[in-house]
Image (cartoon, rainbow, N blue to C red; front, side):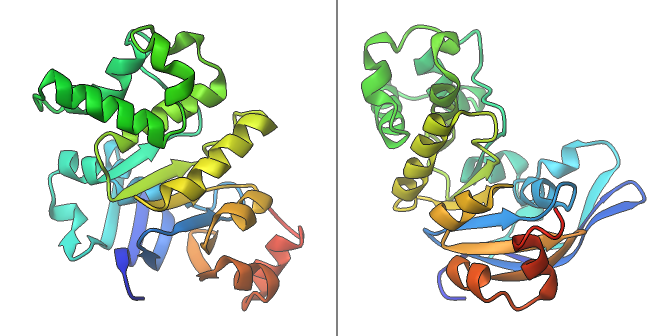
Length: 252
């Protein structure tokens, strides 16, 4: 695929003796949103955790195969660099509770020991919060702790924190599953905007959400990549019977 930003080649993932992913070959196109769908326990979250090398943090976890960011082998890179280039936002909003909104956004730089001038920090905080569609709501209380924010605002703060490092790819692991419909709709609108600047991989259980926000969809079942293609095509004329059965609610 032209303009591929990330590629997996025969990616397998294990927890001890248990195999979670089996020979996944996937090409993620640049500046598009790719949804990763499939029933619970099929390996969706493991897939994106392999991509930014969080999978290996679990004792007994390992991977085989290759993950390439452009032409760089992710497994041979310093994991800190990998996580700068491939940011992640989790299912449950997790702002750092003891930090102000400002410090939350700039946290990646501080944790990595990257020193910036105050004016540069200010610029990054404002730009990241604007990209996460949160600036107008919080600009007057940016030095308060983030605990007063609603769930949806906290999730947008986490997105701003990931964007502050200027990643190539943003991994979203069911980012709206803990949010109400209104907050969910804000995050979905945001995904549309963010594609201009960053490539998105979105794990979602919500077929409607995948249909609304993604350009491409990967269907994973029992650790295997069953089908991958443009979302509209996969939803209307899936090539594999298992995809069709999942989309029509036969299992999942």
